[in-house]
Image (cartoon, rainbow, N blue to C red):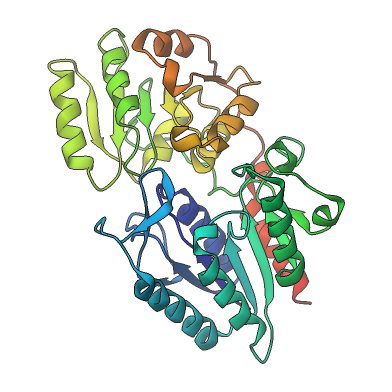
Length: 374
């Protein structure tokens, strides 16, 4: 089977990372995968076995998701968007996939509606129409108006064969963040959580008993890192800050100056981050999907500082649900201080990691799509 995944990440890298994990699952089963990425290029992901196609990239204007910028932060025009649409549609025709997955759309990425709809129309017009599926995470940005959910459901009903929900329905049902009608419910296929295999402890022992601080792979988290440095100055444990984004070099220099003589490790995000978690003392992190999966898999105690700028509620909803376990605590960004962070770290406790099958969403997705092709 030939599969195509269309994904555009606008701020962090979580959407692309999850799409790549799905793609690797299909590759492992012997399928051919074309991954169309419309966000800015991300080099430190595993694309082994995947054919990666880069569209003319766009990103959001910070947390303003209603304004798109080019890779260098400049404005884009309709010609730029037309070139993206043309490139995406040409790839659909050239690749002629047996199955097409759009990541998030139509539940999100409505600013790129014309592009996604052009791809869907092109796919439907192929001599052999592919199965068309939508891929969504556990928590969505809730619709601000009932009309938005109604329009989304209309597109799903007209253009899609199923909706892949990458969640455990018993832990995080879609209803937590999105109105699910009886009609939409018939389209949902819960896959379980999508995550790489559980990490083995770091061979060099990195992370052992440390407090690991991460804000993901994007250029966010400056306030979180600042307060983490201030907290580390009051704590006897070793802290390690992993800084991502295009401005990581400048941000690391700023934080090192703030740390002064305090022995804190401040470095760019690392590919072996997951291997540090099994033996870490604790973690401080935002609550994106991939980070939450890493922490659940390893049982690492953590304090979540959910990303909530620009009215975002996805991470807050996820963090509060997970904090029902004593493995996790939540401190909102508005209330975060070094003292509150240290107090929250005292309340969290390591948990026994759940069974591997709880995070086998990639392979369950493959099985669902394979079954639809029979």
